[in-house]
Length: 144
Image (cartoon, rainbow, N blue to C red; front, top):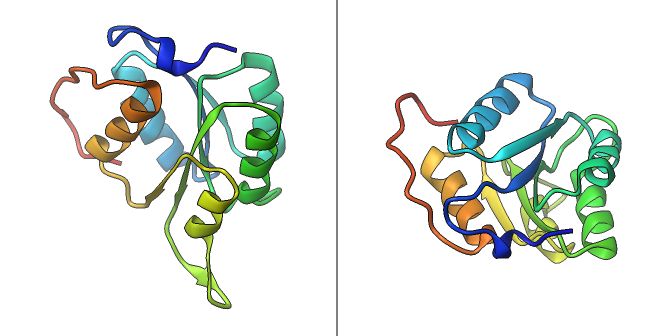
C-alpha cells in the first residue's frame, strides 16, 4: 500500500470515509472530492474493513459511533494490521467518564476531530496526514 506521505502536493490521496449519517457523509465526500481526493465510503465498521481491503486507501477517516460496531474497534483493527493513518471524528461525548476521542488516540488514531467539522479543519488534517499542504480553492459553500 502506498503511503500518502509519498504523494506530491498536486496528487490526490485515496481516502476511506466511514460515517453513518448520510447527510454528513455526503458533505465530507463532496469536500474531499472537490479538492481531487479519491473517496470510498462506508456506513459501518464491517463494510469499512471490506472497503479497506478492496481499495487499500492511504488514509481512513472514521466516526467513533457506528451502527454495527464501534469505530474504536475499527481503529484498533486497522492500526494493528497496517500502517494506514486514521483520523477519528465524533460529536464528542463520554460515557461513565470515558472520553471516546481520547480512547481513539490511545487505540492508534493519528488525529481526532470534533464535530461539527469545518472545511479548513478537515483539509488541514488530511494534508498533515498526507505529508504537505495543498493550495485549496476557497470554500464556495457552508462547511461540514
